[in-house]
Length: 210
Image: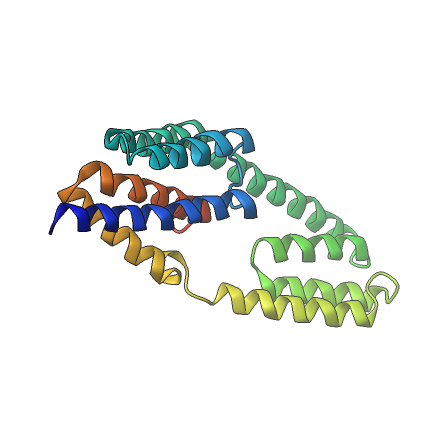
């Protein structure tokens, strides 16, 4: 493949990766990643290196290096945050379960159990607790709010049933494969968009760990 075609293809892939990184920054798909680090190492430096690589092609190596450093700095804190959130929900659930056992008419405990189950993705359990709270007290959970909760749970159940991972993002999967193939012919040119797309996929949980 002629060098000019490889160059154009690589920059097209990098444009896609840069847009994906910007979307992750703008839409908040960076739980556990400090905004200052995401802005600097995840967006400004990679995009800046890409913009100046036309004059200095070797600067493209800065992009995977910057994103690799960002991953090393944030992977552990991010995993710890996710685990801490899970533990907090488990503690909240255990306390509410104890209250519900001690006082079966405790509507507040039922509401807590419903919200925790909803956050944990246990939609049937959440609905059971919402209905129990409504039976205990119409003031605690009016019929209109119960109906809204049912609609919300149905929507969340449908969303949870959709494809997950890279299969849910066919354009990303295609761009990742193309970047990996390009990296064999032009390492810096292919690794720049590849690193960006891998980082975005990790932020979304497409690569596991969520």
